[in-house]
Image (tube, rainbow, N blue to C red; front, side):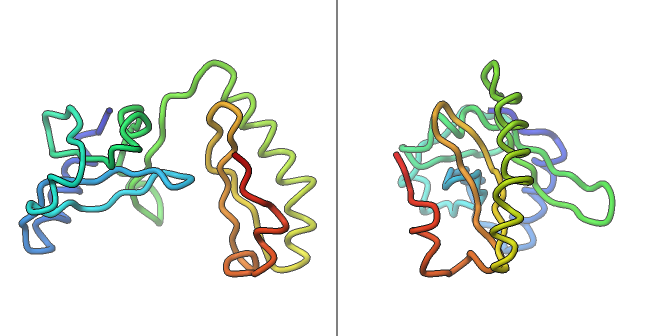
Length: 150
């Protein structure tokens, strides 16, 4: 688990602006990383991760992924926000690049013709995590178009 000083500072600012009473952040993984705040009274529902600068928690089933996370706060350019990544195993970056090219050239043009888009989020072993957006979000055929394989 690695969290930058910029991210810690922004998290503390957000906790204070929301009235305090927060123990830290919750890192979960639902096809991609997700950050939330954890209230003091809810800490017993999560596993606390080793981090000296701020309280970091995770659901028990997401601990391995949360421990591999790198959390940063990006404030460059016109947008700002948290960026959560993880250390990649050997060969994963190459695979991500290849998959992104296939999605961009083979899949997204067809999906775009129906008002949708596919975004590659991550690859872990033999599992590929994507986000279906645009016309795909909420479409009843999304599960048929791309069934959840385990």
